[in-house]
View 1 (cartoon, one colour):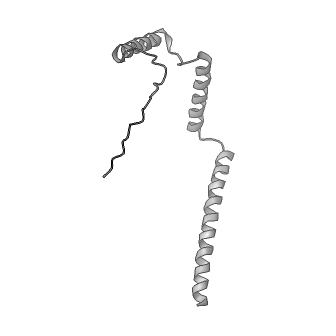
View 2 (cartoon, rainbow, N blue to C red):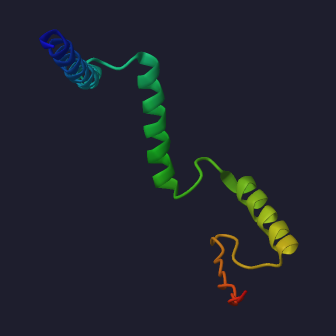
View 3 (cartoon, rainbow, N blue to C red):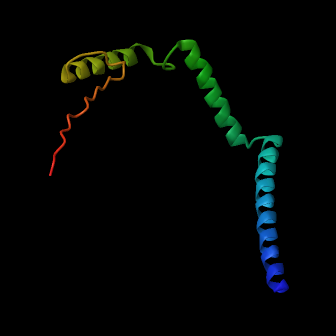
Length: 107
């Protein structure tokens, strides 16, 4: 009987230690990842994203779009308005669902 209790206690202890180790390894991986310098490819990728973000905020829209891009966008919006009956194409449509009228049926 005491041997059975010892095995049960050891399995509980093993699962607790395993869980603690997994958590500590996960947290330490994040800490080590922040502590070391980024991979050169990752750094280049992040630099390009940050550069695009600043250019996008400065231009107020698409970066290096130009007049031809704006012309194409306006033509496509005109086509969509003609196909789908106009309306504001920059706004998400409002859907209104009515509750169905249910009738109670007696048996």
